[in-house]
Image (cartoon, rainbow, N blue to C red; front, side, top):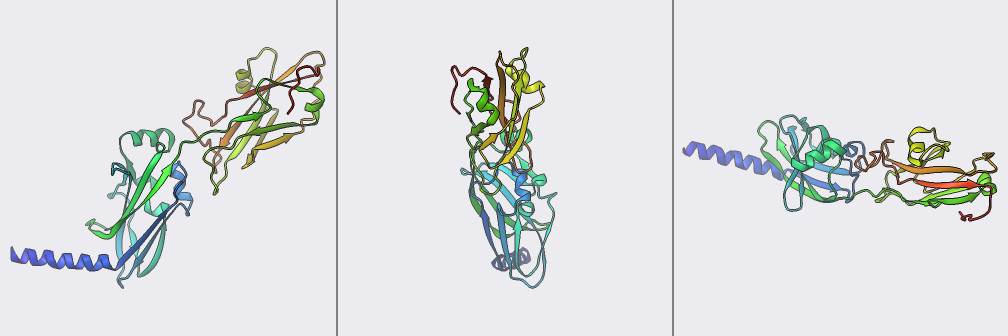
Length: 288
């Protein structure tokens, strides 16, 4: 028994010495992208600096946990599957793809459902904690470091101009039509959203939504970080004794060209569409 305690004491002293020779620093953006899979392709979201002071290399694994502020576990690293890291003497910098490999994170309960459906966690305040464990034994080699971050719900753009159900005179429409909308909220300074502006003609036998779904757009343009576009349609508007109606919408895309919000009503990150009319008569015209 005495020999057992001596061995345990020696092993504890060794671990304490090893821990003392590993210093870590964790930094995380306060408002990172909501889609966690994006973290692995953006090195500036999470930095984990490890200063390893021992001369002999050490095989380790990073244990990462995402928690609520009350300590509830949201996700944790699958230590049986995660890749080992070789620490060499000196300072090393690791990023999200090293510290939080998305494919080896195990999500719990409602958070798992949210990730599977949208790739994102619910809006809220979280903390991410990282520690270093010895490979195989999973003994703690470096104290846990935690940082708080916030995930906010996405508010899609709201269309502003042309106003819904507005009427634009033919001569004005032939020269230019100005489209304006609000930006997506929250905005990202790292990767501004791309706004896909689409305009469809509504045929005489169609409802506006049918035109949006069935017709080819007469304008389809993508604008990065811009919330206004002046269109010079150069259309003849040959129907002199009738009106021509159009429906327009904004689709918001992320840095990968995918819908920024897949959990909205249409799953396409489209704003609520507006309808406007081009007519020859100057009666009831609405200024742009």
